[in-house]
Image 1 (tube, rainbow, N blue to C red):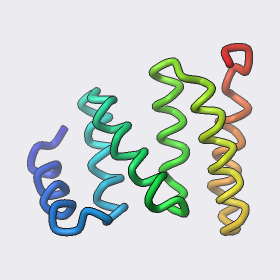
Image 2: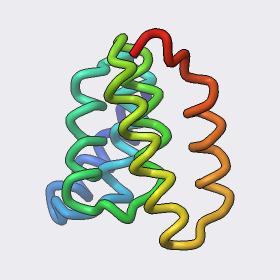
Image 3: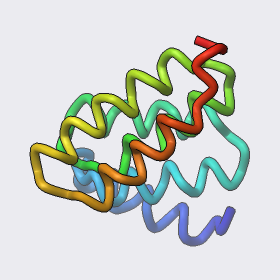
Length: 108
């Protein structure tokens, strides 16, 4: 994790806690650090407070898979696909559908 980058992102976030872009970038930095709980809390904050921020669904779903919560991953992908279709983001919908298809539904 680039400490300087994380500090800058945290400063942006402190000045505007609702800034999904800064929060998303910070969550990705925490993923690099393997701090999954902190990354999860940032991703979930975005999902709950800025549900049209489509990029969060793929990364949050993958995080859920990584921590062995496939049912949450599936729900996240399904919600993301719905929002991507609603906003006509075909690329995101396709990526989320692929992630959903790759998820082993036997684990759910």
